[in-house]
Length: 373
Image 1 (cartoon, rainbow, N blue to C red):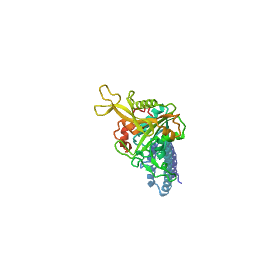
Image 2: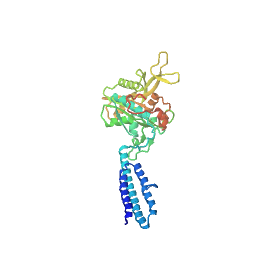
Image 3: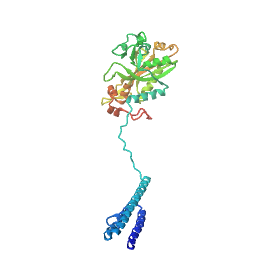
Image 4: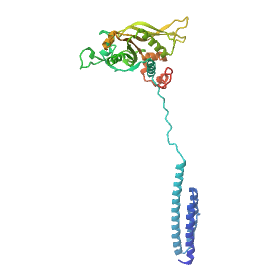
């Protein structure tokens, strides 16, 4: 290489060192891009040197051009390498300092409501539980013995007719009348099963679905009942009256609610009594439970049936009626619910209308006061 070519090559080597230092010193992407433009841009230093090649002789132009192209490639590689490092550094910093909420907004959901039937059952358990009653259960599909015969129903009783009771095909493995299967018409059958499988005394309440062939504004083919049984030595009608009086006053929340007992007949009790509660009519056509003010007529409304357990029922369950006696009572849960919460039509309980449940339902079963909606 001639002496006049040496300065050009020296300038290229010096420029390489200078540019490498500038690239390394760039501490952000903007600074690095400024270096790139100042070196490789249209008016950059390497670009300016490339423009001088036309003034050189062929051999010098060849040598210098190769050197400049090599410098251009090396500087471009250094810029890319520094760019990757700066981007990684920037990402690491963002990951360490930034947060991004990637969760979706919750979809609006309607809160569920407790069905009035469930609410009433809970209230009844609370009231009778405080009196010492425990809960007993039994099957929905019963036989004739537990549903009728053991409860002192005579063979020709109207409840045994097909138009009143949902009978099922007889069990071919058994003989006789007791093989008949049916959907229970009352929860009294649970009392029979409990007395058959346990020794006295008994103090139970039982809840469940019952079935009768009827359907109108106040009757449905399926409805819910609650029955109670208290069998012990020395139990009298006075215990029955005290228990049920305390119950209706606690359930309806009226301390002086008038209660009367009217003689009535049920096959499984003797004597039997219907229990009525007092109310008065309001000016708007509604009713108000309680004692009638002076000068107003006291109205009465049937609320449940009761009586002293018939000796035949005790005998059928293996209990000596000369040693034990007691009382039983039963009520429709829908009727209690309709009276307390002003629900006019029994059929709406089973129509699965969420608007109805939104209006009459309850927020939670874990309320301190279950008598408050």
